[in-house]
Length: 236
Image (cartoon, rainbow, N blue to C red; front, side):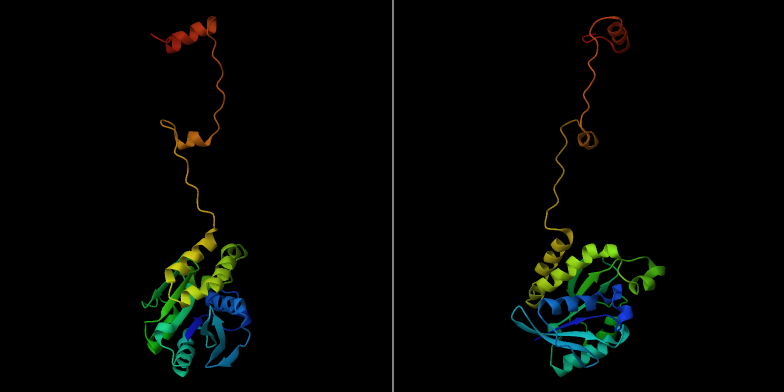
């Protein structure tokens, strides 16, 4: 059995916060798999799910972020779930919005949820880092505790949908495949088209502009004589 944990803060006032993207990921997985049997247990909201044919528990700790480890440790101990079968979704400042990285172990990066979990169960669990972007050191608190902007829906909704769709890959250990699918969902399925090389001797700037028809120069008469004196006649 796998344990999928989303980190966030409980309460309607925090529901749309960037800090709650872990909750959002778990909710998306639950919705995609017809999960509605949430129970208040082990200091969290807990539900059972069948994801791609594999049994899993979904957990949203209700302890507030900085005590998330209390709930995770209780569930892991009660159900005898090893760290290798625990997957934690959380917000990552050091990744651009929409970027996702999966890793096992590592430091907490200053994240209060991980800082609470690590001492209670150890470091060797799987972490799904969901990028929310870094606003600069002095703006971190209002950024993480602020709601996603309307413009963020352009990447956030496809990301959450694809997390739910590709969760079976994550449970099977295909972390690279999971990340690739999410990257395509956020960027779009169309591969970027490479620019055509400019013809030899022609700049890309020139190539990008349609060529203007050139005026035909007079071949005889006073104007032709003047231009010949200025630029030299062909063959001089």
